[in-house]
Figure 1 (cartoon, rainbow, N blue to C red):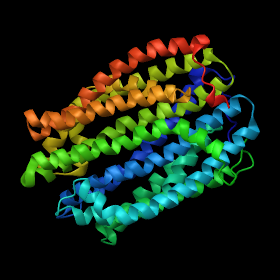
Figure 2 (figure 1 turned 180 degrees about the vertical axis):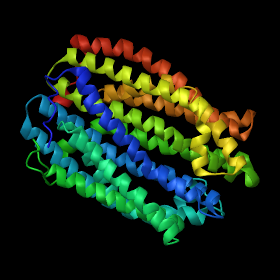
Figure 3 (figure 1 turned 90 degrees about the vertical axis):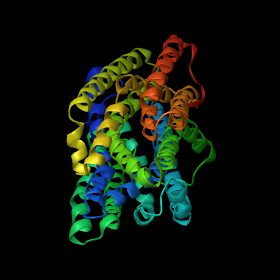
Figure 4 (figure 1 turned 90 degrees about the horizontal axis):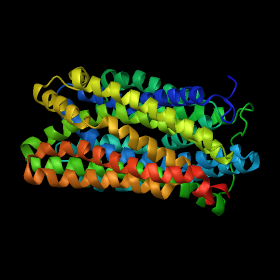
Length: 457
């Protein structure tokens, strides 16, 4: 195993690259779980468009389930990193074990709950009579694998937090490779269609889960994985820190629900499913931007939290700067790509000119403000790593409120597809507000006036 990174002594620019780049790549690979499914589903002969819309309706439920992985994954790993930075290895071990125990309990409960309520949820989330059968099949099988998906996602944060970002990247790489290989086999060779896509994803998640658990049990890990009865005090601290990223991701599902419902309502019986199909393609493209950004900012969180615990504001300042630079470069490149070649991405999903033209236009609209959006991501995740969860949550919810409001209001005065403009409106306004708040609050914090006591308990 490669020697672990030293968060307290190694060069900050080098650490940001060594941690964030693998985590960024891991998030990019993780996107392939959903995108590969959608690509193959969209190319099912005869029923591809309706099946793709059905999978798109499932997206809010998938996002909502994933948010629980971040609740204990990010919440636990941030607290875990602070303990390691303060050289409290016993405390770090307790945080890791409690996070693992809570993930097991919550994932089992969610599996049962969502299996019992899936029909009602799909109807609420915009599934028409035409696309409901596809959504129901996909969601039933996918939800059955929730246990493995949440354990894999949540516990993978602790691999990176111990200084092994490459191993964290391998977790998602293994799952993605399994998914890519099995998708065409199940969908086309065994003629399982949408059910095959969901089954391939579940098997991929099981593979990733086994790798994560085996890795964390290795003796070379500074803090190996253990299992304990959940302790109320430790769990409260984990949830308190993780609640902000949890709610941020959970509210993403509300945004998708609102968009699908608005498109279905204003598009009507003739145009609603077409708009949802195009929106599914556009949202898949946006994942290629937002997920790697989350990889950059999320990958840097253990570094920020470690130096918070070690009381090194100088290293925190440098980390923020280099993460800003990395995100800015990435979004600038993606903005250019979105202007000149979105049609090649869309063609992977569909050859229908109507769907393709609408999706290309949607990508150009959605990506209008992705460069300012990078500032929003760095600020929100950075403040979360510092324990400023109330502020980070408020800034994130502001963007979601703006998005939700614009999604509902714009079609009232314009056309159904004007709802697509809600994304750049929310991204631009939220980035401006977040930057202003960050300038004032962050400076005060680094002068030592804003130290949070609860994260050091």
